[in-house]
Length: 489
Image 1 (tube, helix red, strand yellow):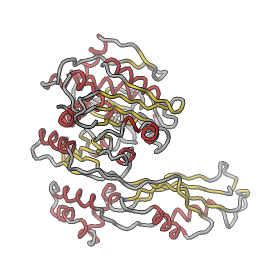
Image 2 (cartoon, rainbow, N blue to C red):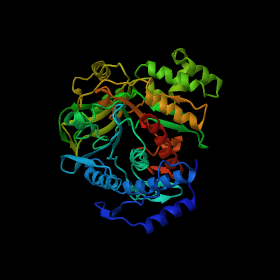
Image 3 (cartoon, rainbow, N blue to C red):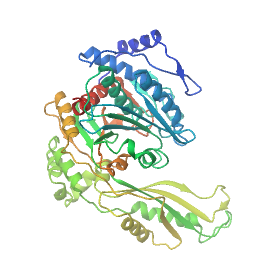
């Protein structure tokens, strides 16, 4: 991958020393400071001007990562206050909504002339747990090291949020005429799938977003190879639906020294073994078929190219099935998936508990019914002492069209970099908050601005999460190029 290098890093640090800013509320280990404005002119034109924007984004992201928003509990209010101060310095007003103590959502809107409907930048402030003992650096240090900004959230999704934020700031500083309002919405609770984040905002304040035509969120990918060459620009137009389940086994409790025939832990283990060994059928949805057909145009291996060009036919060949489903992403795109993710029995080693439970993460392909999958698992377990119940409501998969001005802007921005660039629409195996907005009729795309190879992408929810300075610089410029094509008059 590309690197900024030592010289660029020194410029960032020197600029920070020359232009100190008032501190805000932040982690007790270090105050959070506003970064200097490294580029104050009109629209950046030269490579050096864009590097200045990238250096400012680097400093912002380093500051942002240092605000620990691990969810639970989230404590997103600290981030919302920091974002509000950054926006205020640019003359952008924002509102903070605090539906619960410490939980916050931030809303800002830069006005256009109203000749076209608004565009929303959506990002979430919370991050998942990071275990410091497995990291090379403190996961909340925001350290700039070896050409990367390190820390939990650098990719998911504080880095993407900074690319969105710098696009909004650059549009505002440049004073370019806008035909659309641009909305910046930073929310809570995305990582826990419920709570008082995007879903709460859409329900409590639909008047602030329902006039929008477009939304940009996480859920896309720019896939790069090990040498940093971009293989494709992936736009998220649809995603699988979560259907999380609890598996509960009941039996007779007692002393661990006297085994019982109906030990609920034993029952649970047998049930989970059956579930783990169960293979759901392969299903080719229209969106997945389109994606594989696109992949065929860049695939170098003749056999795989033929499989991808007609994935339905390929799945009638056992050798093709083994090869394609060996890829974890392809496998997840071709079937409903089941992952056992949590177990609980007794809190004491010498006690047989009356109840043992497990959590199962099920992801459904578009068009698949939760009740059908639930009945399938009940049949597989085949034990009346074991119950399987949904943790909460599910929702059907949603999809956004591609015949839009924003999608054309994404294609144009990609092909400005490479006239032969492949722009495709890989379905997301996970899920995002986009579905709340698609239900309002807002065309919602997952758009990642960072070219990531396979190793770098493993940082999402993993150890040593980081984004390279060069990719951050690329992402800020790419995001601006996309959005400016869609919002500038």
